[in-house]
Length: 71
Image (tube, rainbow, N blue to C red):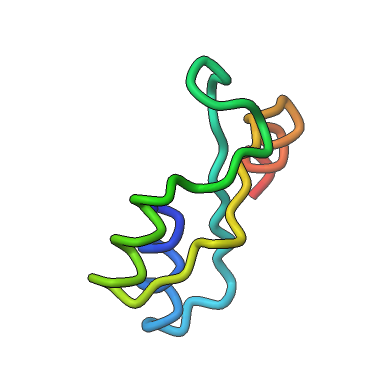
């Protein structure tokens, strides 16, 4: 959800030079590749007109951290 809000915020400010990604730290609750929760999808669509139906969870990797550190 935070990724969707951040992307909307940045697009409204024409901040096309910023990349937003979302990563998980654990698979304790859902396995990697899980879709967004039905409730989350419903709330974002109904209340905020945001679509996260294509979301799939991804674990944070060392490569993600290294790439962010180089920005």
